[in-house]
Image (tube, rainbow, N blue to C red):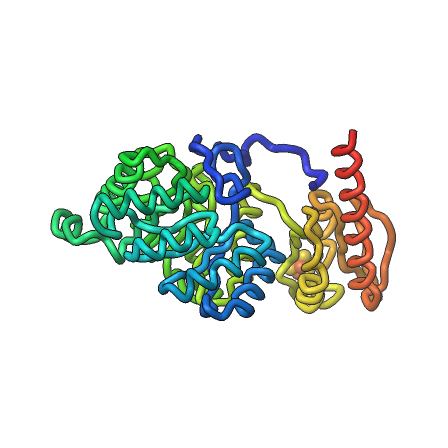
Length: 375
Ligand code: SF4
């Protein structure tokens, strides 16, 4: 909720997709683009898995995926689902029985490729279990595990092969009169992913789950995901996203939000605009931003905060943010509220003071929202 005026040149027109439900979270249509992550604990370790889900949900995850490779895992899933505040997607490969067990255990969605679980009778059984238990399905095409006949036909993983695989899986579900599905076609190569997703988006109205698979570690994977997912989202493609990082799932959630926030597609928490700092800085910008990022993690209300080292860019950035601080001389700087100079503040008290201002503003906005909802 920034005081910035709406600017038409920054609006993204989203592709019109059908809407499905993943538990109580709508995906597709005009629903906000949801952010997902996946646990990396042993699913049979219910305590550790639930703890990771709770941390991910606290960071903003709308949906969490959990691997269910064996019967012990689908058994554990029942308890995990019961304790999770967000819908759980069960990740299944090849085993149709695991899919049925996961649906019975309360999974909100099954990530499964119907073409890889056996004959038509098995597909029908999984679809029946999904229907009986109100589960949606995500078809998850992956360039690394394309069907043999498609690799023979196309010679290598390519957009045409990935889209054909996706449409084949879609047909299997539609033949069983099942329409509550979304689809992804991931690759670790951004060009391949992007081309496949664009073709897929033109070929179906199913909601699209975006991801660049095996993107890498925190820094490299973030950059790769921001480029790969960013360009698709910018062109309106994508209804739910998962950033895949070799890192804590909470980091995946944070990066997912940052990508969506950069494109104005979601808002959550405090967006800090800060300068890289240089010899002109009136205070230690880097340490201040690090401290503020940690101390403002609990704020969920969307707002913007500019932390700028000096007057070269400080007043200009403050004009476009809800709260601003610009370094000055003699150990203090200027606090801006809604773009206007408000008061001076000493560098030594500035972090505590800004945290207080942000908390105060968050409480005001929450109260205003509650009042508007009551009217
Ligand atoms: S705003 Fe000032 S301190 Fe920050 S990088 Fe620019 S010139 Fe340096």
